[in-house]
Image 1 (cartoon, one colour):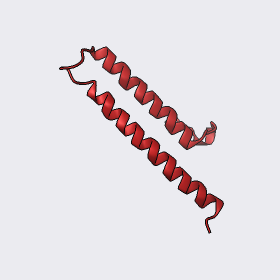
Image 2 (cartoon, one colour):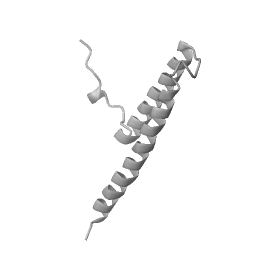
Image 3 (tube, helix red, strand yellow):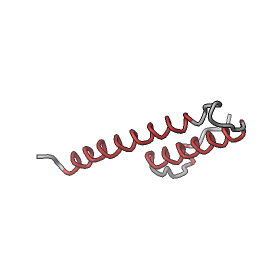
Length: 79
């Protein structure tokens, strides 16, 4: 019989795996927009896409890392 933590982990693997599959599929679809035969776009528009994707990745990483409180003990030392 599975413990509660094992059930939560199994659920995480199932849900996160499915959502990753969807994201990968959507990334491929977005990549199709790079076709100059079918679309016209500026370098700035492409840069805006990547800036937003990078921002979303940073926000996602923060969610997984948890909120870290500021501490002088963990601050880099002045040289």
